[in-house]
Length: 466
Picture 1 (cartoon, rainbow, N blue to C red):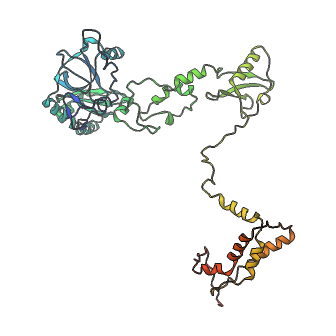
Picture 2 (cartoon, helix red, strand yellow):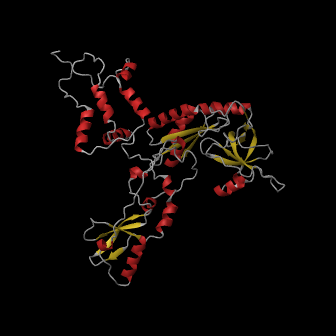
Picture 3 (cartoon, rainbow, N blue to C red):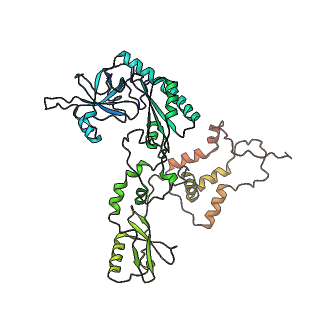
């Protein structure tokens, strides 16, 4: 059994394993997750008046809601499935709001109290079974209705189909640009579906709200999630926000101007109240200049000469007001290029260093090499002693023919020492000197005869004459 909490009102939706005709047990996660639900902020407050409000707000499939009167004083809460009065028969809906807030909602929507219908009872098992079976037929009925309208040749689009709770009436929602003659269409529908037919025309915004989709911002459409009232949007809204009048960028999925253009309109109007008029002209010594562009956030105005409009000059609005005051006194101002102040460069610091291309490289490699080259040679005596002593047996390895022999490090160091003043080594204690002499002898190499020979990155080339 379903509580009808899904946006489309599909009966296949389930709120959990525990659900009854009284509604969902987890009202916070199910009953209030729908875009037409209203937060009852008076639910925890006791009514000081003795008389209790018997008005209830009930919602149906999609964005259809209505108000009913609880004449039998049935204990109802948000999420309760009820059977209400309809014409003809009865309908099944879900309670979305109870209490004193219903009167405020009725006043907000200007709902007449004379047309309020009554609630019969809480939906029993039979009512719910008929309601669910009728909802399962809606998709197939919608496809069949589109085929019939296309066969007759009517320029219309069937957007959605809604069955009444007792399956005694079908409501077809459609969109059309022009007036449509339904005399032949209703006869075809009545013969195909064997029930009462009701046709309702909706706008393109309502169609987008029923169908749903993803907007250009990457989020779900506002009209299908939380937006319930559609305010008029015109091109002046885009002009106030300094947007280019491009229908492809300003239009939404419904083909009309986006509703989100109205969201920041008040902020733009407040900011523009401090700006001079966009039709402002300045009388300069070089000629007349007119406003060509406005930047609301930077609070600047761009001016250009009437004769040569290729060069633009931007000024703060405070300076523009002073220039306008001079023109009103009959004084001409200096040329625009003389009034233009040089822009001070803004020094920015990239804390994340995303623009640095060398942030992944190891910078210690080059630093280590430079340190080894600049390190003073203080061990010339030890290296000289090692040079005279015998080396271990060398392996028979083909010599490199192309690469020249590398000069010995001790010879290069001695050569450099002859050209530059040699630094005298610091005196060392005798015990430490004996240890260094012992370590530099051939016994050190004999202690590690099995030392690993690491492979070089580039193997030596083979000599053909070897």
